[in-house]
Structure formats: structure tokens, C-alpha cells
Image 1 (cartoon, rainbow, N blue to C red):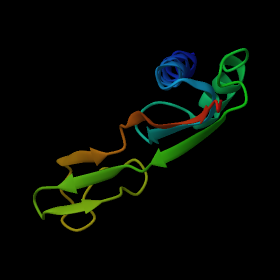
Image 2: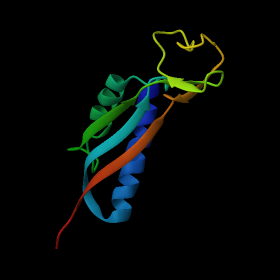
Image 3: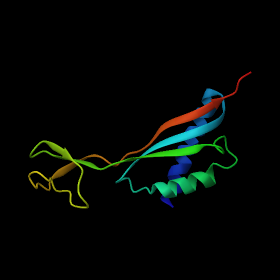
Length: 117
């Protein structure tokens, strides 16, 4: 499952950051997932729940921001969100469009709990 390896990598990033900052736990992990990334957010959540056990993230919540697909038409200098699977400009009907957003797959934040002495 592709989502398991992605979630494993995201958790490794979060745990490394927590260790570097001296945090005793991770309370939240934020991800941006583009519509064209090929990742299913529900599968990420399932993988996160399984992988976070016995780690500093065991009580953490996963926050997934879905990034919509946005295309650009150079013929009429317009950005648009496609309707369905047709990547045709709704203004000039040009099919030679450029993907501007929607492929993202990023760790956007790691919320840490720091120990107090």
C-alpha cells in the first residue's frame, strides 16, 4: 500500500523533528495532499493510526488538507478548476493546459509537546 510508506516517511520526519526540539510527544501532524497525488486521504488516516502506536505520536491527530486541482490555460491566460476529467479551458476550449496545483504531498506542520522542568 502506497499510503503506508508515505505515512511512514511523514512520521519519521515528525519524530526526528520532535527529538531535535526535545519534545516528549507529537500532538498533531499536518499534511497537504493534492487531488492528483495518487494518495487516498482515508488510507493515510488508516496507516497513521496503525503506525503511530508506541511512538511519540501515539496520541497525535492527523490533519489532512486536500489541495484542489488548478489548471492554467496559456491561450487565454486563465487559471481554472476542471469540471470532471476534461482538462479543457472553459473559456477558449484549449486542451493544452498546465497543472498549477494538485500534485502536492507535503508535511506542513508538526505540533509538539515540550517537557517542562
